[in-house]
Length: 311
Ligand SMILES: [Fe+2]
Ligand SMILES: [Fe+2]
Image (cartoon, rainbow, N blue to C red; front, side, top):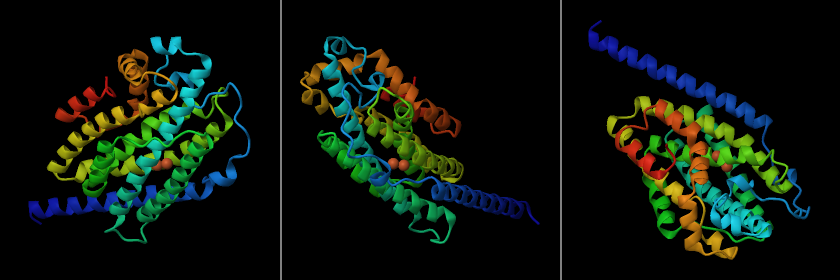
């Protein structure tokens, strides 16, 4: 056998190994989905009234926490801000999930429908459908508005979900899932928080941990096998998402709706060392992982830094 034939055989063996690994991950995720999936409509008590004095989001995770403006606000106004920020994050969650569902559909379009990998993607889409309905219900139930992202971000999302590459899609997925997931892990056990919000975040954390696993494993494989231009594109586009993400994270309309000066509030959030710390801590697990698989290099790394999510 010639040297190039040996190389070709090794390549084939690697590819087969990766496919087997992809199937075994998906099978485990399917098993876990069969055991631990929830119907929010029946699982949560939607009739119970909200409790006075309870938060809709842990105060330390509210954007203005610890700023001079926060210190001037009454307790009632702080609670109200947490209510609106929870609605803004639920709105952001729906936006992400709609994008993600389209990315997943595009990801499986050319793959065998009987594979566990495709069956799991379909299961994840089912999860996201329930989540988006749950978030919409919680927004309506909290008597808060729906907070869409800006028109520019909305249209960037439209373009991205139509043309992005596979590794680009999974990087964006992780960015959307992991920072919110970190916040939700602090929210559901917190007894200062409204029971309905605790229930919503608990369901979301349990089901999302499978999504994070699926996306991480796929992205790791993709970053090893994708062509060089695609890997480079992933580095740059992920840095750009990180910038969009950090700006779009809380819709500034929330400040107006609780009676604050929007420009002053936005300026104070930007200047807040506590907020920067929260966002960097929230992104830490993700940025460590992305660093490990080679996404945070060169221009991409500089963009991540400028987003404020990477120290
Ligand atoms: Fe979700
Ligand atoms: Fe998800």
